[in-house]
Length: 321
Figure (tube, rainbow, N blue to C red):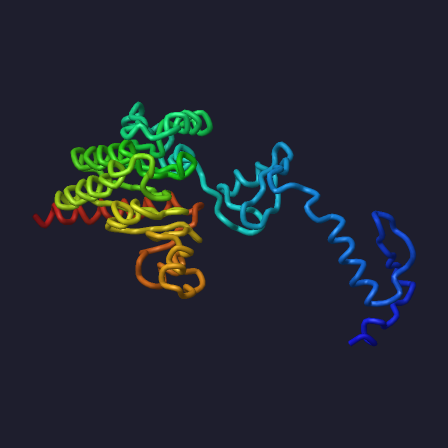
């Protein structure tokens, strides 16, 4: 081993020794090359603190997965899908509604219904104010009625930018009211889920929204309502265990994390390694949990096709009756 490390390196390679920050004499053996690399690593180790943020130039967006930067205009043209690696970036509720609804058909429901602090949880009100300022939202959900291809519908979109889309009393109330609106108007219902689960600052009040929203969906279904559940990244916790998994049709975006507990928690609990891609939308489609994975660019087209099929089936049923 020592002889191999002592093998000479031709001077024509141009390798020079690093010492104390200065480039000095040429490296002449593999052993010296390895030692030199170690010196370089030590010299540059921790030169940038983990707490320091790296500034991204204006007009650029950095991908969370591949860390590559691309022009914002390219991201916008690509529906906020990385132009380089194809990974999906979360998008806001209003932007998603803009992608699917007919222009001018958006009418928001319960716009002024906002987050509260039922348990007087420490610093919760300050955090709510900070989230409102950061996102421009009053809660983690936007509900509305509108049209897709001229077909009336009710839509609900959870926004993961606001408390990770967690389900609070206000979120549960807005979802329930939207379901009841669709029921009263006889409209199809589409819910886009993106949530980290129940909001811990609201304790049992948050957990009760699971039963509340599920009961509303059940009544809607009993009255013949058509519900499309669209799961986006991430859909976890109490939202997964309630209305998100009760759809007549269940769709999902590529690569979305969908489950109750996260994979790391499950692995620690069962003391075993999970299959690759476990809880990702592709894995769930393969195992029958989803009806289809839908690319963001074809989202409106697929939803319109489903709504048209449902309308046609309803018309045929009316004729037979």
